[in-house]
Length: 114
Picture 1 (cartoon, rainbow, N blue to C red):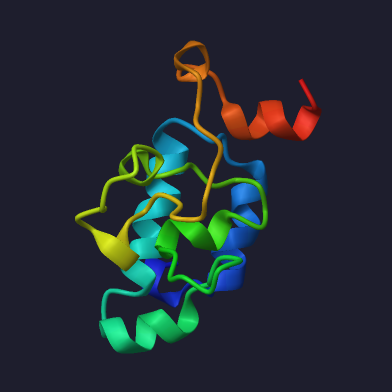
Picture 2: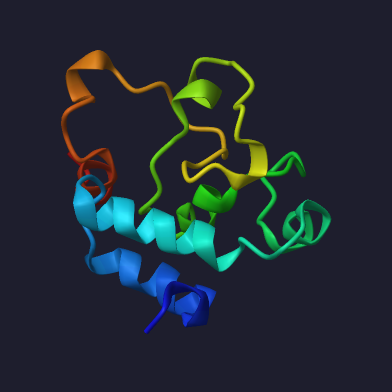
């Protein structure tokens, strides 16, 4: 199946069995971004989730509710993300990530409670 033919629900659902890091994750993000390639920014803004303060998130933010997102490092640093709503990383507010955890699968660690 071509990426554009996959439904967004199928893509988000597939995140449950894909590691939060690595080539499978990268492929999932590419497929999410490709899904919206022909959608203009105004329409995309209507489709993307909004955070608790009603701010736009990003394509990567579609995975936030499932717990399989990866935070945008620009947003974590308090900077503006140059990719904006088309960023494959999550633009929801996240707690800062300690340097010691950068190499671990943070999403899995949070879910397991460790």
